[in-house]
Length: 248
Ligand SMILES: [Mg+2]
Image 1 (cartoon, rainbow, N blue to C red):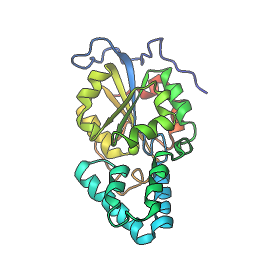
Image 2: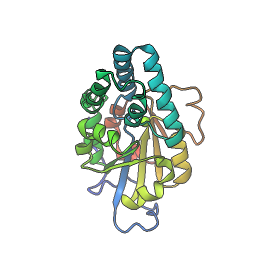
Image 3: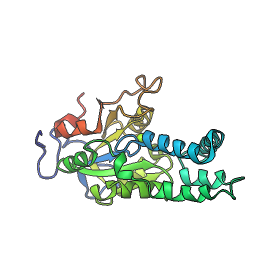
């Protein structure tokens, strides 16, 4: 394992002249903004297991209906909302005892099994170079529970931010966690590009090619392109502070 080369404050060499965000009083030298779904844990696998469970309990048609409701809600709210979808899904199924079993399936899912290899080790390693913060989009019940039960919440020492459109609230993020430089790690290249446009001078973007978004058509053609591309979240363990520096 390569040792972090930053100083005690996690300062990245060559980054000292970068201006701190407006309004920042004291903060970290580097804050890592870590996405959750398909970045730290395998949410594609969760969706597949949920679909399989729905089909076993209610049949293929109802499984399809659940995902149609899911997409309708996501088009309205902008986030994946498994619980609200279940509330809508109950229509016509109130008499089916299997409906109530879906509550336990969702809330007691073995989330730690979804973690990608060395995901928590990676967070621990990043702590030696800066402050790891979870920056996720999601609902305010299921998403925090997933993050907590997977062990991510404790790994980032409670530094968890969950929004509806995180790329639109980066000013709030910078106020909450002031830093000289930020590193965003995400499986959605379009999201990283949107964040880079908002923070062109103090953000390094890292695209992790995991999950279906990473391999979707056009994912390699975003502008601005990600500063770094990795195949697995665990690859970050081998990064040094200088690897996160954006070179001109
Ligand atoms: Mg994601």
